[in-house]
Length: 255
Image (cartoon, rainbow, N blue to C red; front, side, top):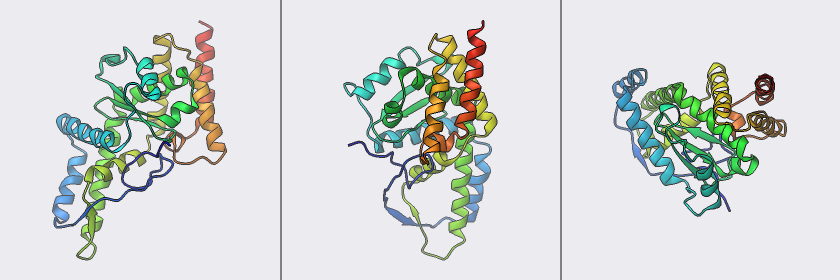
């Protein structure tokens, strides 16, 4: 039986998670936390690359990855064959064998797709989601999301530092960081830009670009049914985006 994606606590983007980690007494003060908040806005490319690498490694180690020979892993590998250097990026793709209807990408080009999403969508619909996630990487949205998550982590440090002595922090800071990252929504402008990028990605590769409309329609239906903790939580307005994707497809059909 597939599980739900593991981060630190239950996430807005996921169906539900329960995990416990070792803890330690906080010994650093507000100065360190303030420095962290300042650094969040000025993370160098090297810092971002390292943070991205460490976080995705943590996620891969703490979630069931569908290996070669697994139906989900083989399906994704076939779909993304040849996309590793898409648009000048250095991309890698993996499936988490979990029930969540979700996908995400990190600044280093790691794209992670959940088995629950693969169960819901056709190959071309999945490719439209993957193209959208690649857009977040190429357009710098994933980096901004990481900066936001880093700043939130720092703010939590300040809040805890100001409480009574003996307060504890989760020993695994990466888990907490990923919680913040996955909870951070993209702006509407970022989403629109990545939608357009994803549509152009579909056209450029001669995929069925009508599938983007279908993908958004399915997410909209889940949202109407009261679905929580999935891709529609972090990518709201699916019905409107489906309509926009249809407009793009109709225009492309007329060329």
